[in-house]
Length: 480
Ligand code: SF4
Ligand code: FE
Image (cartoon, rainbow, N blue to C red; front, side, top):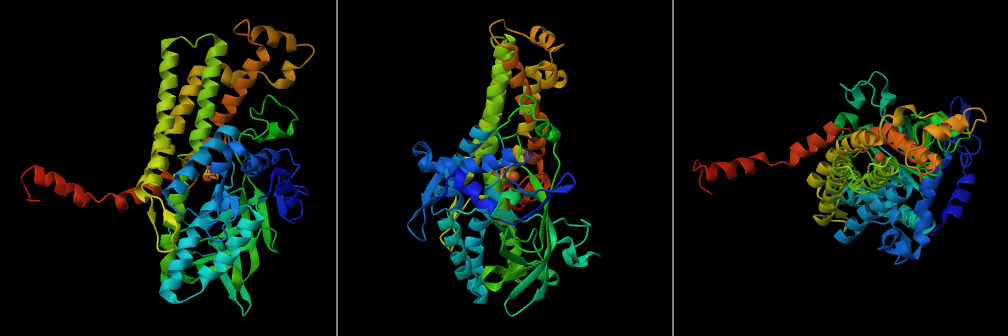
């Protein structure tokens, strides 16, 4: 297993084309906007070497028997599914941010069952190819990016109906030695810091969309791949060389996301895990989505723990921690947070074994988990803003605080409790401000699919006929 330094060093060897703020970034490992994200991902490597977290951060490979980072592990039982959620909560607590390595983890977990099932039906050898790739990922402890969300063009049209055929990633050429893919994936968490990108279809395809039913692994610096990093709320603060104003200097409060362009990228056959089997794209998407929605009952809860702690701290600093309405609001935040966690755990404990041996979460409960995450963090943010007070929207900048002429006024007039340094109060206000107004909340809404996607999955699994029958029996309309 790599440690944090080895991981960062390994990235320096990649030749990636990364653009941001109108320029090409030569060294992605040092840029002030990207650095906090890199620190977050690096922590997934570092904690695997910490005895205290070994049980959560590592696992035994079912393929080689070797000790591996859990981010490269395929769940072999419900305990593995539960530990996945707990590991993510721990990392959310440590970073207060998105640590980006889970998308690739869910991609390999999903492919471990779907490639197996495609082979069962079509006699292909995708599973063997995939397992070869997976052993390398585990042994070299690679960071994988999961490339699923296509840019989608006109949302009312199927992939093959789009005027521009590149609105969904597709196969443009089949050769003896491999395929060539073209298109772009949007909102790609962690992609800039990944060693490998795992491409997957973004929705259930039909026969006419055959060329869009493609899954493969591509070295993240392959020819033809271009990364364009997205802007975020408060991003320029990170470039101001300030410390207090970014709120969470080390890890930021959100990861980075990029538009990843695949401009005719060649992929050899041994890295292709689905090519034209359109009838398996639906199950692939459903499984990946469920695994990733499970996660949100971990990572977002860990981030929620930080927010609750920050809200309780500012209440202390303001001298109002004993006020009954403040205590009630903090309890409400805890209740919301633990409800998200309970769902994440429940879908894991209810996991079942798939034909390949991989364990699968309960998809209904996983979707309920994520649908809660599209609401509860917003209510928690509202409560945190309420508890913090108006200063969250008006606090002067760090530069003014350090300014020889006006700094002393800020020092004097922003003080609350006598025994708390003004700077401490300003720091916690900034942390809360960045957590409740930043990109992290948007991620809670749209990450792992927008709320409507969860509602569709919930509706599909609700079994209303069964529930109607229960009611009719009790009402004496039908017999059991
Ligand atoms: Fe992982 Fe959560 Fe970030 Fe998704 S949002 S990549 S599950 S930390
Ligand atoms: Fe996400």
